[in-house]
Length: 488
Image (tube, rainbow, N blue to C red; front, top):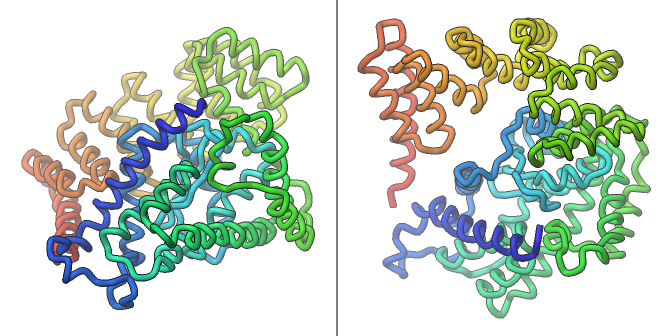
């Protein structure tokens, strides 16, 4: 990514951050037209950055990123990151389910923690990591930021500050995780004469996050040297980057002292036994294959890597062949992988897709059904199965499959998108509106979701009416609670 593109991206996110912080904290600054009513930051009874406010900020950030198409929605990649992140979070002192992990569609080498237990991992970071422990080291570092509430502590350390300025400070902190120079400039503008002290405080947070992150790695059974190894390689490559540094180096400056500290800390931890890193390798290969148009040059590149003995590149080659419609070639490419690991879900998904691409839809549908018996509830298998059912004119079967998963407590945003498509195909107004309502609710647009359900209720039969009415009552109760909370 060029420096111009980096600043353009940072500029877009800076405007986004300022907007969402204002949105999330609006109820708290409703009285700003009367300055005398604004509480001071030193007043413990009127702290602005409460856990509730943090959750609203994190939710607003994700909704805005999704609206801008910046969230990566591939279920195999996101599923891997969620699985790795959950393993690390379980050893971080944070409660189960307290962290939301997501993948940002950006080739910049970066990751960030936002308020409300939201952690974003850039696709560029996954591609830049050479081992799972290196990737896990960065995630563990961000988890440490969350567990220690570094953003809130930095905010509180600002001292006496009115809420209007606090909103700008919070925006600057999050912007600083996207672009270090712009974030420091925003902090300096916001904090004035105390800027250097605050920047020093933030840097001390980075050191603390390193220490705690290495402990999280060790507790999870991953290599604690993943952190100094990753930092060291980035530092060695700095001269190659010129003035276009990776975002991680701009937001997490690496120097000899920091690497030495991380190495010393890692040396005090037990080295784990080597682990199977196939899931990590497949996620990286998948991102490589989906990173651009899989034209002949891309297929040729992966083919050359396979010839050189890079067996994991077989997966990327087969995926690129499927994307080009070369299903038979993909099946041949996959054969050695399937023979070695016949029950790996990632391979089964791709083989079924290759069968469909070669015109063998019935065989592909059987493959999905058989695989789901082995891996019930597997999201990527379920999604691919449902999409092929719709493509095969079996939208009703796709509906039944996804509704069963949702009723079993295994729902996902992608399922509602597919249910919306199935409802449109079947001219099922009730099903379509119910799916749209859930999508709107996930986007934080509860009032619009309620309206969709009201419209569905007008045309629903007796069987559906009770469920729709119960869901509508739940959303309306949530809206009423929010309205009461936002009263000045």
